[in-house]
Every structure is written in C-alpha cells, then in structure tokens.
Length: 185
Image 1 (cartoon, rainbow, N blue to C red):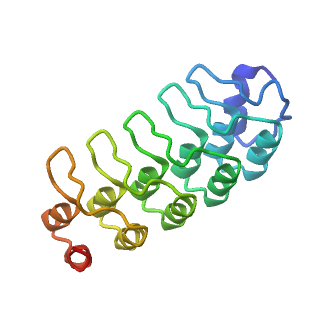
Image 2: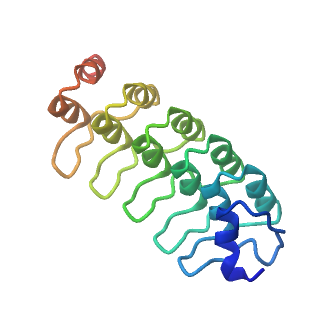
C-alpha cells in the first residue's frame, strides 16, 4: 500500500500493518495515521500505532493533534488512551481551542471529565478570550457548567466583548445556569 493511501484506507476501516517508519507519516494536510485511527474510532489501531512509537502530540497543518480528532468523534476510550500516552491536554489549535473547549462545545460530559481528571486548564482562553465555562454557557449544557464549576473555573474572566460567564448566562436567559453561577459569586 502506498503511503499516500494510508489515510483513506484507515478511514474505510481497512486494517494496515503498522511499521515504525510510517507511524509518524503525514499526508498533504499534515494528518497522521494516528489521527486517522482516532477519526475512525479505531481503538485497537490507535493502540498499535502508539505501541510502534508514534508521536502522540504531532499536529496537522492547522494545528490539530490526534487528541482533538478523538474528541471530535466523541471517542472517550481513545481520548483516555491518548492522554495516558502523554497527549498534551492543554494544546491549542488554530482558534486557540484546547481539547477541553472542544469537548465542551461538543457537549460531551464524559470527555470533559477525562480532561479535567487529566489536569486540563479549566480557564484556558481561546482567540476571543472565552473560557470553557463561557462555551458551556453558550451551548446551555448545565451538567458541563456544573463540572467546570466543581473544577473551580473562574467567574471573573471577561471575553473580547467584555462579558463574564454570568453575563453570558443572563444574555441567553438560561435561568438554571444564572442561579447556579449567582450562588457561587
């Protein structure tokens, strides 16, 4: 199999033999076979690629590592595998989103918990100075707001529009989140 076909073969679910020389191979977009395995949700292949020595923190051309591919596909087992293999839980992609912000935006509490347990920076900011808490409020995910508050997310940060998390909750009219945040202020 030619290396240029690796990404497609993995995405189609075809088994490949992982060799040390191809485990950090990148396609024209900078995607690795580990990213393809994560994108496909193939835990066994991801494990074999890591066992062959793949760099868990390589990024594609827009700055996205394998961990964000796993989160994008809502793959808690692969996410945990990557974290245990040393994936940087505070890495930032082009929009300055961290894996935690990714998981929050996708509304996946299990992934949020894995990242919080792995010491993800609960107050990391994106290009708009928004935190994971602000994203959770915008998406109205009360359970994730609770998780972030339990992890001691700051209520004092302001984004580029000069709004705090509480202000965003008030703007959206989410009374449950407003009450939750007001009880903490």
